[in-house]
Image 1: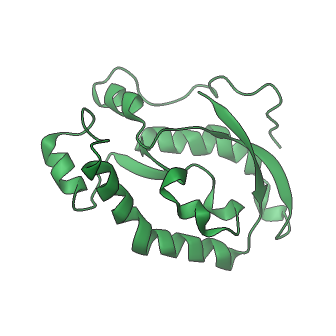
Image 2: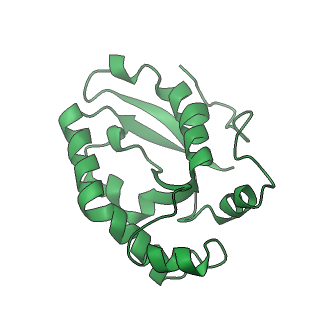
Length: 156
């Protein structure tokens, strides 16, 4: 797993809610359709699932993950397709639990506008290999530890 160091800036709850609302109303469905129509689900989803993806619907075992957290930037760019990835739900839960929570567990104590450097995992638009492996039962998707953490990754 590759990681990228970024600057997380605590935003107000209103900004975070606005980002989430825009994502839910405008971005989510379009992103799934884009992936389906550009064949990025080929070999990952069944033909039936791809047909549903063309309608903007993901299978129940998959999630869309914001690579850079919604709550970490004032910029509306957090909802760009380049900041989104489709993950298996177990991977999504584990990324949040094993990567983001240790770095941001005290985010509630941060002042709006306060910054810190964090590491985020780098993903392609579809985490195809891990999705297929989990679906085929070759892995559970659970991470016992952060894979290849940067040497200076700080957990607060």
